[in-house]
Length: 508
Image (cartoon, rainbow, N blue to C red; front, top):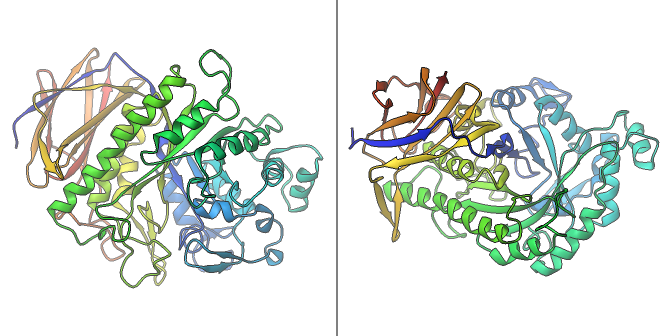
């Protein structure tokens, strides 16, 4: 094991609450995410409930999925909700020009999405169409979903077989308005966001958290423009108006946009480069957070990272517009590094949505179109190991000793990462060893409360590109970790090279 390091954790000094919603998910009409992923149809031989694949639902319920963003993504600003309601055999077809230029029949629409959220026990996050839609269209959609009386849209919903309104707590005002959502300038979109948000009304007691399409990566001007568009942020004590959150998008890749890197064929250099690029998320949270703090020191406006994850070249032989990629141990470590950053910025980051849930980009789940097999990815297991952080209070982790680093493209990448939280009489410590070859030992200096019991899990693999398949579904899966021992200061934890470890604590 490498030189001992100490992580000091004051268990009696809880910080901001880590919203469970930072463990959110994203499902776009893209490739086989919806069709063949979530949706198989009622006549499918695959076990389903009303056309929704049962094993996918069970897997996501097992990790306490808190919310699901839909229908996009770029698709959202081409989507007109009336095409996806009512009898399925009467719905018009449409061209998905963004993703594969395929024609779809709208058999998965509003009713099916809301049924999916009910099966998952997840909050719906609907992304409204600003790019090619209208204010009236968005206003009528939320009325259709949430109004309970005999209004025109509530009556239409009843014609379609649903009497009671749904609850829709999250609503997106456009998507990537700087790009596929309209190619707008920040000032143009800020005005539109105020207008559209005004008409996303709260019917029948349905409180809506409105999220305006935010910046791409390091476009701090976009964030500042949106922050300046709020009403009386600095002295108001009520709810922020006209919207409550702004988004941020950032993807991890090792190459340029035209050649993002392989999901499975990579060496040590690309391992470290991917993790250094993932660590850039921390910088983005700090910088965008600093811009927001200037206008909103009380942190009343939420930052919503509703698209994040790895983006690699598609798997050879697959449709390039379907964005299907394998998911390795490297992706899992990218995810763990992101969550540490989100935990540290819990006072500002209120939601995050990995892209995407099934069969697209950094998926939780892969489904085999030939065998119908379901495969849980290494990234899925990071989400599973972290459920103890949901709605827990963040705890600072202070390192004593010099944290080891690796030089990556003129940047020194720390090869240890950690975060912690507490809830009631429990705590969870997450530890990642990014080093390819060097095992490490970390002492957890636990202060402020007495430790009663502990247990630990480890996620690693025999190779950096280890991944799960239908033939080997558990090549990368959590295992009990016995490398945790009592220490005079608390616990001593062995961290194997290229591994992720969580330590669960029972406290007095």
